[in-house]
Length: 73
Image 1 (tube, rainbow, N blue to C red):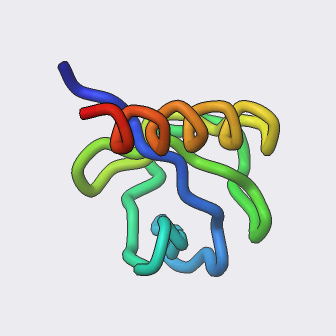
Image 2 (cartoon, rainbow, N blue to C red; image 1 turned 45 degrees about the vertical axis):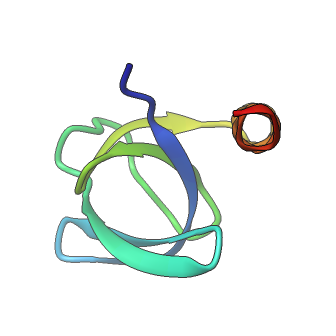
């Protein structure tokens, strides 16, 4: 199963967004997202591409589920 991992946007430049996920940061291609991406947004990513913009509540829900799964798996 593949799952998108939430990351918080900390910088946007030249069609890419730098996101913070857990304890690391990396750049994502944001060309698949139609609406504007700005600092503070939450993105779901798969590999090196942002696949969806989500709310902070949705991001928290996914992160909580991932955290629970790591403790039980």
